[in-house]
Image (cartoon, rainbow, N blue to C red; front, side, top):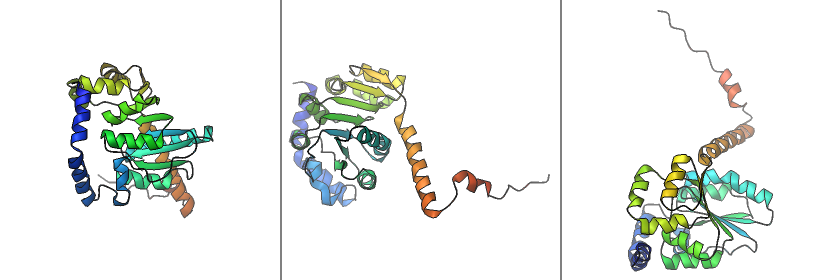
Length: 248
């Protein structure tokens, strides 16, 4: 039995334990009680009747890095809709206020069990999948590829520790990384690591998260200034008292 098939068998067999684990997370406030079914692949809303781009971002940092891209995609393609999946409550709260209403929606990513993954993909049927950075769920990635859905890895990265660990499991990571039609890495080092782990095509394009984070913080600051009537930051800085001189 291949390593990937073994992974699928184990994740299928451990279903009851996975539910118990999620319930413990819920008790600590790390799962959304009202939307818990989404983690089992049960959608909380109908699929839009339009071509659908699916973006998976693990948590709040990755989600923020994609906001500008989502805006650009929707502006350039008025007929498209966007589905964003994440795995954290904080990212869900952010996206509830930041995604364009009526054009983009958030769902929690399903737990990486074959039955949950199948249920999720059966409902949403994305036309394109964009995965952000480094959260790679083997069942979800390979099942997406098996349905003929184009896969792109955006802002891809692989820490030295993760790279070393994955090298011990080539039977899992090679088909997972190889499922992506294109990997856009943060730098040349990340691109080379992805190639060694099975990427068919990996390019270095820079760190999108840093650029997007600066843009997002600048936008939020401008919104606060507009609401409060305060001058921009440089003007406020000039109003500060000059530093005291010390006499030696």
